[in-house]
Length: 433
Image 1 (cartoon, rainbow, N blue to C red):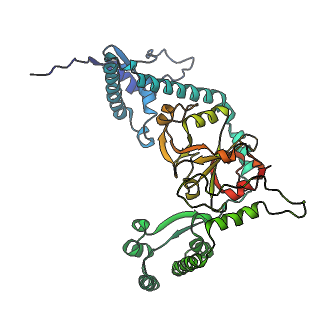
Image 2: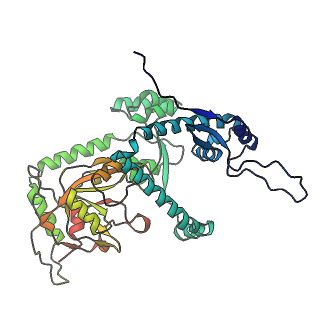
Image 3: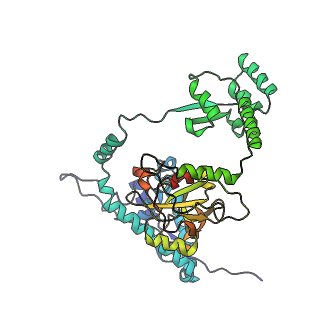
């Protein structure tokens, strides 16, 4: 049996394409101004058809639009090179779309949802370009820069390389190689056990808070070009000392928790004393898990726009924020990923009453489409991934009010809506009785 295929009629219009090449410009900027004395020129088509697929036209303006999505290095290529490739791409796309329509795929529920989201995104972009774009003038940007950044020193950063080794003998051998004039990057590639060894131990630029204190203190103390002594052994020694102290400490977790609770609500003699209206929960609602002292108990502080988002959270038991490397995204730091409770805040440095309990430790990763399937109340960005926590209201904290303006570590200005983590002891310190 020989399969048959319905032919798709393709017509390339050479004359129109020749006009396009002669222009050498995007189709919407084709004609040059003429002086009054110039001789009349041949009128060029406003938007010539360059190809036709099953009666559907592909015009010069389509090529111009497609060229804007090309990588920067390809946009400067000659039109007689780039336009034939673009025509091939547009013909393929048009043929696929025509086939999909013939098969009725535009009536599929999933396809319709995707089309609706794309339409919403296009309308949103169009509105922002029309209403916000004119406000983003050079003068406005310079004024904002002068107000928020000019004259303000940025946080210090250093650029460093390191060689990570597993024992003191190897460390001393590497130090000897370096003192003998060995190339640091070459030795790092050969000897270091760090994943960055392939880059010669290059750590790039970093702030002091980005590294463990033992390493950062050395890196920031060194002058550019200098080499520090081997570090890490003293860090291991300190860790062993802490383990010994921990083993020798006979205080139970409950005693530690009581100790921290006392310091949260300790008597204020000058103010006449503070009164504890109700006890703090010992176990945080998680079975078979040791009680965590408030000073070690991480609370995620997140943004919530309105009651509509709160209602969605109550219904589906989810809380989300942007994750990844794009602008506006948040790095999943250990304190955030390991949070046991969630405190929500909103406009005007105000917090929503109560706390939410994390039903499961750590977030899941959702796409925008995943959130839409869960009935998310607004349109998520289709190009972003989201960290999603499973949450539920903690009945113990129902109705508790918080003085968010006094919360330690809260963020301000443009960063005020970014999630961050604090200790439960910090949250309890702003509890309003």
